Image (cartoon, rainbow, N blue to C red; front, side, top):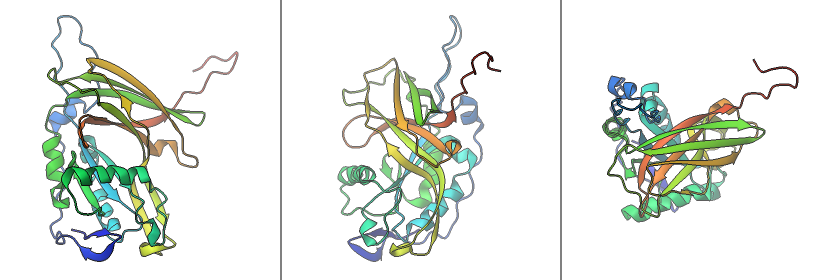
Length: 291
């Protein structure tokens, strides 16, 4: 594995280098037939009730362009993130900002991302904030356990059916998310929220300073922005809507909107989903019907 790093002590402290490369995940036909986290349409009267979809495991990585151990960890993540793996998981790389004073400002770093990691620090009684840090389904995980944990978590039925869309038009990205109970025993507290997150599939950055000075970083699953959480009620079915300012100079087809349904103290994700951003159809020209 890669050594984890902290700005207060740049000496390596972490765990052993993983010498075994995990095999690629085989496609799980049962998961594929379930349609992942997409919402099912209402069944007609008398029809069999569809089985709940299988969940997508939430994979979070806390990383930084100023951390020398992070490029290796992200390369490993890219290797594991085959198409079948991505069908089973929602992957979010949160770039923290506490490495910025070391000489390079992470172009994707955010105090809000650091705050999310601090919440995990409190939850698990961690001594320090370290990068790279892997969290699977709100539990700190070892890198060599990544595929095993995702396989296990994605075999469980989803507690929510999450459907939705993310549409780009005129510099804005409109997200509409539908939520429906898949588990009839699920009860949400008054603190339940839906957290909308805008992500970028991939970016190449050349560092001109800091501890990765001169290196070209290939990064994926990048969190660009997390909006304020949207309050939820104890729902049988609910639709939430929100909008992002579309980032300039980034291709629309590289953007997606993730939604995390969270509840309870600390960081507790009930279910998550990911929707690619698509461009809205062009409005028909006056006098010329749309094709």
